[in-house]
Length: 155
Image (cartoon, rainbow, N blue to C red; front, side, top):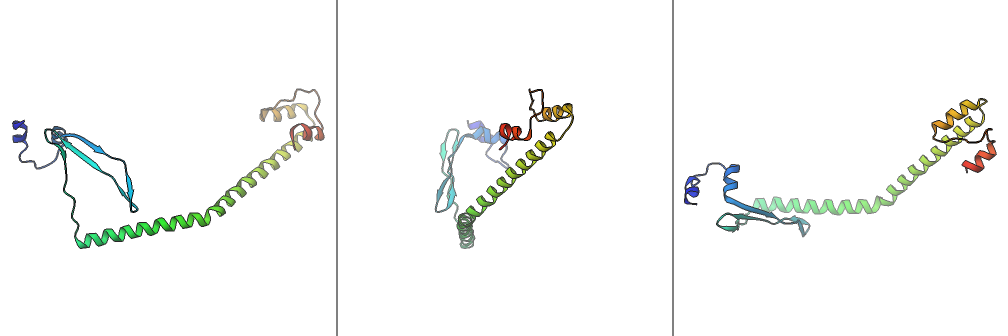
């Protein structure tokens, strides 16, 4: 151990080798929220020494003012976003529902058009080709009437 410490007594730069030599483990705890701030505890354990207590950073008055401004701004943004979501949530849901309804109506219209096309064709082969493309197959030998299609497959 003395050899290791002697070799590293003048450390100019922290390299991975030096870190691996001295650091036993680093424990990172889960994030906790206190007063709207996220706080995360980190413990550093060194070989042959154990847990290291790092001194708390002492901020100057200017740095404290800057941190307080940041904290107030974050708090304001949180409150603003919460109020915005509460106010606009019903409107957003209404827009989504109307878009879904419009999509459903479009699908129904397209299905009605394709049904009309199928019913007004003269060739049985053409009908079979169009139906097979939709992954449906008619087993009957004759074409169904428009009323039969509506009762069996439609609305």
